[in-house]
Image 1 (spheres, one colour):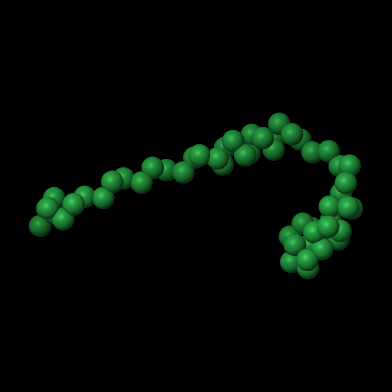
Image 2 (cartoon, one colour):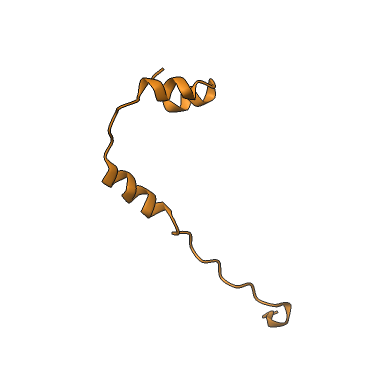
Amino acid sequence: MTALRKAIEQGKLDQFIAEHEGEIGDRDAFEATLRSMAGKSKEVPEASSPDDCDD
């Protein structure tokens, strides 16, 4: 088992976790990635009412 995606597809996530137990990643990089993804969706502009039509 080498890839997380493959483990998920094959239903072997527990095996993947067991094989990678004890591995340490870059916590700062991980947290920076999460922060960059969280709450960054663009605000949707308010829709105009039918009365405001420029036709």
